[in-house]
Length: 102
Image (cartoon, rainbow, N blue to C red; front, top):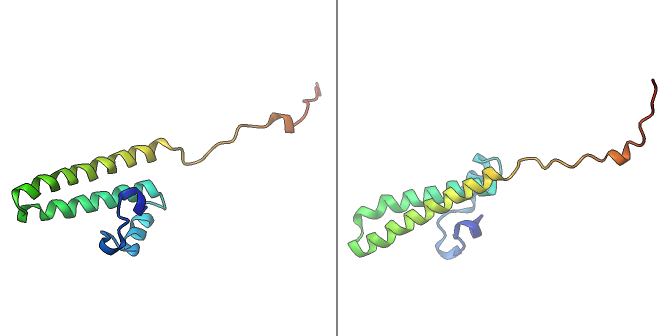
């Protein structure tokens, strides 16, 4: 999940492993939905800190918040489009010939 959300700099990680596990648990181990929740959380943290930033830095952070939220939306869309269960095609060959009992 760290690779998906871009939180792969261990020295300056945004989330602990335990926090990421909470997102996974909340989303029934759906990595994309958990990543989307993590991105929304990260965006909220950035947005909360914006008021104290300089104007030049504010523009950068504002873009970052938008980018994080856009990626979260994309991941949710991808997760919705993927079927939960993969149905196999029926194998009628294994049944054999149908006998006429009439």
